[in-house]
Image (cartoon, rainbow, N blue to C red; front, side):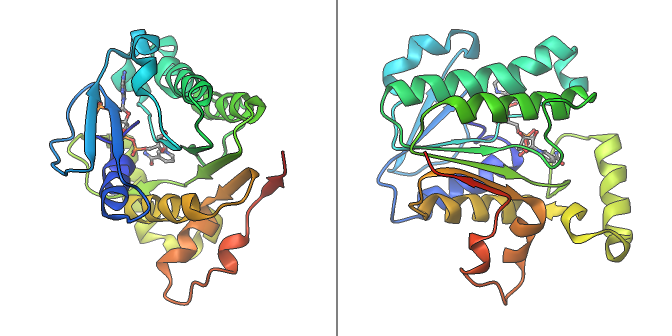
Length: 226
Ligand SMILES: NC(=O)c1ccc[n+]([C@@H]2O[C@H](COP(=O)([O-])OP(=O)(O)OC[C@H]3O[C@@H](n4cnc5c(N)ncnc54)[C@H](OP(=O)(O)O)[C@@H]3O)[C@@H](O)[C@H]2O)c1
């Protein structure tokens, strides 16, 4: 879910290329426009997600849903996309036997934050941690870099600043390529560990370096066996 977005589109390409997956199901409100014998697109009304329960059935579930407050129009509408839809997806998938849930969250996600966006992300992370997935993997990227059709003025200004002053910004806060995040998510999904793993942006960015090795990839903020 989120396959028409910046991270999601890269991730979909990686999953379609991956030999691990025989089938990739996209749950979306519009088509990705991609063609592959492995791809099945299910166009849904997100307000009626339970009507598609039978189709939301996969071993691994990936969610990179998100929306800007400006585009949503109000905090309650934004919260539906940031919190309600991903949680509903997780609950349905779990009932159908999914083993792994991968969430693209955000740097600074915190259920106690005064910022609605970071609070939604934090609340979603906490709600997902209660669900008994065999494995829950949460990714917290910093500002995402990559080509967007949509103009986001504040984000575009932040990108200019983040690129120009990158050397003065601590590693963990530096902007990260959306493509890198997608690759990291795909790689993390291959790891068979149980429990909850949270990957911060600084760890995700390391795969941009050629020196990256799989041992470093073990590094994460939290690990709890369930
Ligand atoms: N932007 C950043 O710099 C940044 C930084 C850190 C973390 N994040 C988080 O990283 C994740 C991925 O970000 P991204 O930039 O790849 O996201 P994105 O490009 O904005 O894509 C968002 C996805 O959510 C879907 N979506 C939005 N509103 C929807 C609605 N009302 N109903 C159904 N689907 C809806 C979009 O579908 P449509 O194509 O149909 O609209 C799209 O597939 C998000 O959770 C985001 O909050 C972003």
